[in-house]
Image 1: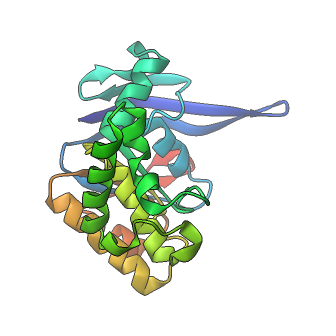
Image 2: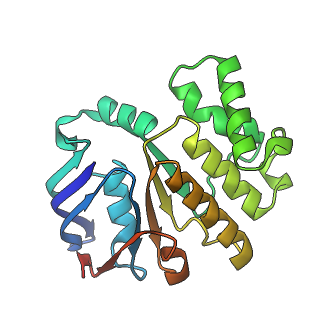
Image 3: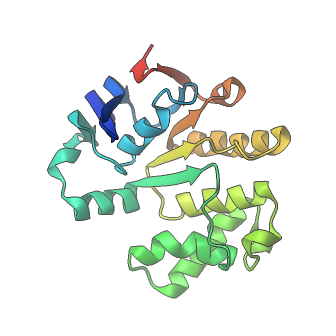
Length: 219
């Protein structure tokens, strides 16, 4: 489903050229639950950005569903991201003045789905994450765990085949974090491909495969 071949990525910092990913080759099959681990600066978030088509490599090849991403223009990449990939971030990335159901409906709006169907699907997904009674709540009226569940609902609203989660429990206490990871396990059991970025071994243990990054290389 996802295949990276000798991916390299560097960034310019003043006169310096810093190589962050040093020839990453990786294959992730459909339906896998994979944890990408590493300390800060190991390159794991950069790798997630590559997989999520949020950034482009300097060299190497990325195949998504057997298609070379390099051959897709910006519009086609955006279409794949919108339809095939859901994102969950540590900081939730919720809009402060927007109620939960509208947060969840955003990806559907971008796909041109009508308002009634947006609201119906948002209601379904919020019920799935245990927040049916929080549809009209703003983010500041929700706990951290509830905000992350809204973010997960938003990520799965468009029924993507892949979920990318970057430190999804990083801002949560251990019990709430465990609840969130149990929900990711449930999504995996339903057939989702899940790629989890974490530095926490306990969180990584929820995955069925763990990949360790150090200094931009898989070790």
